[in-house]
Image (cartoon, rainbow, N blue to C red; front, side, top):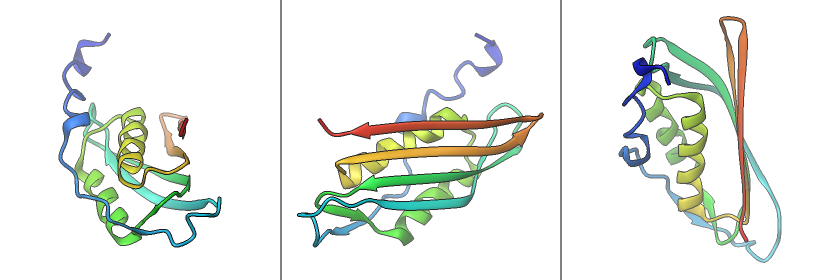
Length: 129
C-alpha cells in the first residue's frame, strides 16, 4: 500500500454528517422503486485536494419510509469539502440510506468524470434478506 494514503480514510465510517429525514410511505403495501439522480455530486480527492465531479444514481425500493429530498440534498452537500475516495463515497452514502429508510432493496452507482483519462464507476447493491 502506498504510504501517502495511510490514515486518510480511517474516519469516514464515524464521520458526523447531516441527518437524512424521512416520511411515511403510505403505499408500503406495494413494491415500487424510486430513482434519484444527482448529476452534480462533488467531493475532494484526498490525495490531491482537487475537486472530484460525478453523478450519483440511487435506486431504492421503499418499505415503511421514503427519503425526504431536501434533507438528502443537504446531506450530499456535506461531501463538497470532504476528502474521500470514490469507493468510500458509495459505501458511506449507501450505509446512511440503508440505516435511515431501511428499504427492501437499494443500488447506488457513482460515475465520476474522467481524471487522467480514466472514468471511475463504483456500484454497490443491497437486498434485505
